[in-house]
Image 1: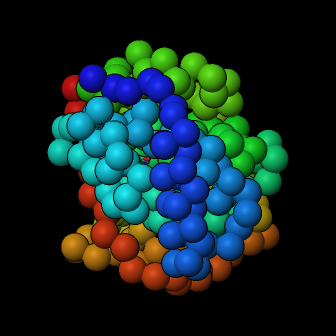
Image 2: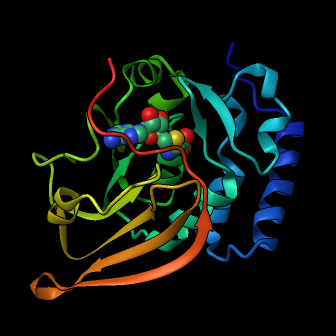
Length: 218
Ligand code: SAH
């Protein structure tokens, strides 16, 4: 069962979570405000009601996880979202990251390769409030050529390599935030597509994501 009540207690726990991720180095006020406003416990089974506000990843079924709030904030901050930016997210999972992106002003296109997780989000009532998120069932390595180009791409699973098609689907001046690496630990990278398709790469901290896998899972 999913909870759907947001109490003062939950709000208090969220304020503490915001303090925690601020103390870990997140400075973007829009991102912190989004984390402070979105009831993360709605995205988890009621067994995690209070735990939802610990700065940790948790299981969401199908061997997948909801990312740690710090990681969600970190990637969102690196993406430097502007109002109405078209953002492609790979790995919808719980859809928590997607709601954070929408809250900071993005028009979100999010892809999930696992049918069960995709179907679950179709009946997740809280998401109906988010008119600027579009959900797709598919393989993130392919991106969404029909909706391209995008201002930003965010990958929320460990990418073994930089997906070429996603670079193609970026606008000139666009940015991709990607945890890159095939092993246990990945390096967070930000790749900017400069004019005449030159790529600028910046390297940030290490993280540990579930793997980005090829193809759909029915
Ligand atoms: N953004 C999510 C994090 C989910 S974990 C959240 O906020 O909860 C990563 C997700 O990426 C998993 O649900 C996994 O099934 C999905 N995934 C892995 N490889 C993928 C691919 N090639 N295309 C789309 N989704 C993928």
